[in-house]
Image (cartoon, rainbow, N blue to C red):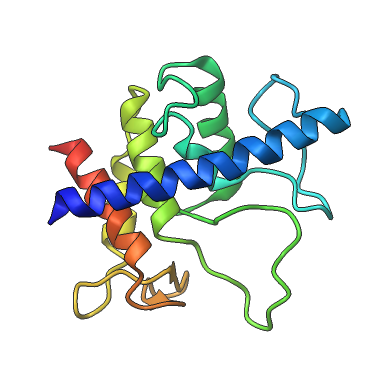
Length: 173
C-alpha cells in the first residue's frame, strides 16, 4: 500500500514541478527571473504572491536540483527562515488568503521539508516530529494545524498529508 501512495505522490509532485517550471520560464521570459543569490526568491513577499514557498522543498525530490546543490540548500534555509512556526511550515508567504480565519501551518509541506533536509545531508527530524505530532484523535492528518493547540484544521483527513508522511517515513527507514 505504501508503494501505491508513493507512486501517486511522485506523480502529483511531477505535475506540480511541471507547473512550477512553466511559471519559472514565463517569469524568465518577462525578465523577472529570480536571481541566484540567497535562494530561489530572496525577495520579500509582495502583492503578487512572491516570496518563500514551501513547495520549493520538492525541487530535489523530483529531480530539478540535486539534493546537495548549493541553491537547493539556500532555498531550504530561506523556507525555514520565512515559513517555520515551531517546526511546522506555512505554505507560502506573500499576499495572505482572503479568508476570515487566518490559515495555520500546513502538514504536507512540513513533511516535504523533512525529506528535503534529510536528502541534503541536514536534519529534518524537527519538522518530521512536528508534523507527526499534528495528528488528530484518530491518528489521521489534516491539511493544516491549529497553531494554538496542534489539532487538525482544514480538510480532514487530507490524503496529500498522508502521502507526504509515507514518503518522509520511508526516507528515514
